[in-house]
Image (cartoon, rainbow, N blue to C red; front, side, top):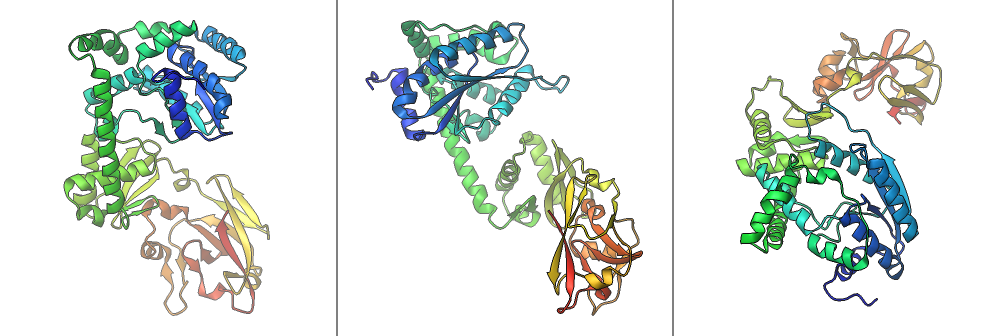
Length: 438
């Protein structure tokens, strides 16, 4: 391919050769604006030489009265390039407290992540990178936010990130491309438009290379972020478990490293990071609140709680705590517990679990905990309250009402996660039933 050195085509070709393998599927986020129209033109020229498969996706946010017309424009454009286009309409939630920009972006990325593609290709360019970095700094971000946008992140690929908007505009003029203008781009009430229309022209007069300089700073921040993550990985080798973080490990670190580990723990579980003030308050309470204090922080659909020397991530709206379960069992291989969104399986085993012979002597009922139950899972120890057994097993308070109990003619036979009563334990020479979640 005779791509002239340093042209947008040559640059995108170079990026794709490093990142994209033959026969991989690429989906372009197409808005119909200058940037994505140029990228569509570039990718359509490169798809056959580089042997990738290209489709496009237009997300209609239904904010502008012209959004349907923009979708039609994108359809005609893709037809000319013989590229498949999918159009998806989204409805933005109202009264969430978030800006319209943030809501639209979240909806757009949710649609991108549903694409069956090896790469989602986005048309962010050098000017976008400068805008993103400055906006993040003005919001008081840490190194995560100051890293701005990377060329790759998960399945997202931004091959124009080092190309200026001016270079894209020049390319479009030469190629005689057509694009649409979103009227909201003129609205200075949006922070990004304010920077683009009023601040950056002034900056360019005094600092002509500000775009490249800010992009270089973003790369330095990204390197610092990577080092922070490596430090957190080292600090978290023994302290991070699925949905849990050791508080003792946090207490042994300096304040900065403890914050870094807690931040990494939340990111590891795909939680939107709280503000620096809230993160510090979380750390303070995890480390310093009284032993019997109820520590709980809302984090979207999850909450962070403290129990038994661990910080736990649990469902913020766990319906299983309030919904009671009661089912008769007549030998089925599994029972669906719609109230808890789970399926309980019954596995036959030799010399393991509940004695099938003894279980069949009565009516078998599966139910949730009520309170006051007693069980003897250890034949060498006396019968004990289920409350004490749950505490001894280290089961957190919010999970104790989610333990399933097995009764035979009103006699407690077994508790999932605790054990089988001594009287009903299967002998080595007899068949047993083992309860397990499917």
